Length: 467
Image (tube, rainbow, N blue to C red; front, top):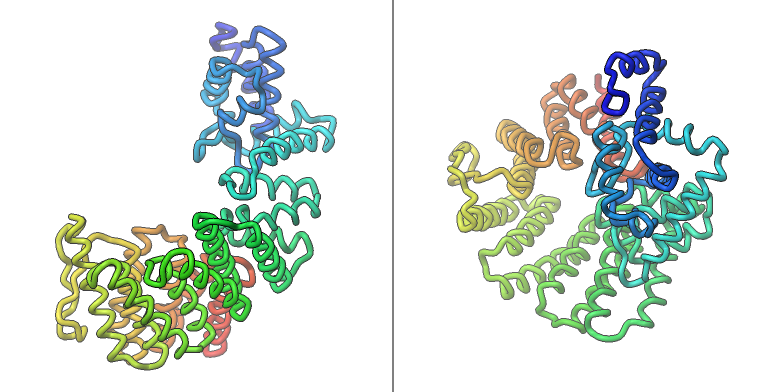
């Protein structure tokens, strides 16, 4: 309207649009008409096209590096117009299209020549992020964009090489892109075992170039990340070697009593728990507990974490009394830590004698408190104290939904445990509903072959046989 000065004419042009894509095209042409030079129009085209072919969008600083002739004033003006007209929006500091139809309009307007034009813009981004990439320093942007761009180009060789950059894979895994990382490996034709072997070989080769304490500590982190990744994939026997190597490096580069050594012991013990080698796991957890107590003091949250881990281990071995004592000790530590932080906003008194706990109080909702409630619920479930177990599991689910959101995998765990309880009580309809909710969350959040997903499917199948 500002360009034409006639609101009736502008509305008439809008009403003539057959669909949203046509309306966006009208908006784009309005912006083009407001630009005074062909150079500005060309920069508008470049900017929209490069955003369109990216994985998650492009930042303003990246645009200025990609197009040095683009001044900050010109960029600010273009972004303001595109944002005001609902073509672009911001997400995590990146410019991206507000709707899919906006990207479709740009494709039709600027890329009618076909795949060759799209490939050219993708290649521009590949060259930019490859230049940004160095083996020992990988930003989240290069880790997000490069593998995806190689996938879109169908270049399996470059994708494979990119995945073997240990820092790219570490960055993706640590930020929760587990399924995406796995799908890249499947695209290059590697199964989980082959992938594990290649990563381990690549790490051993990288180790040869590591010198000095800082690089060795970084190497230990890489070995630990690989071990955790393989553990999540269910490759327990292959997860042990990298976690063991991470432990050895930290003991040598730091000190046998350093807290990072306790972290390695904890991770390695977790593998042995899943592997049902409980004796090995108990020894490692106790070592981690001793180191944490010496490093932080007996009432530190890190100590509570090790107590919880030991409690879970004893629970798996039906040592319920030992498990309960450790849970209570852990909860008191967390409760005291919460008070010291000033985050305890009043106590919510739960059952006392009936719960076989002296006095369980909860402070501010936190993931740790929700996990403690869940584990206590499972403990009472295994003792066949179903009413008490139900109370804890419901409180855990409610807290997780508030703190983490209803679609978080931890909520699926609580739903799964509640479903098992209702199944035990022969409330099959309730159990079915909760199992299906848990399955839906895990399907969206986890890899298709993740053990937790298979666990829920198996229990749902067993339930259907009973109904």
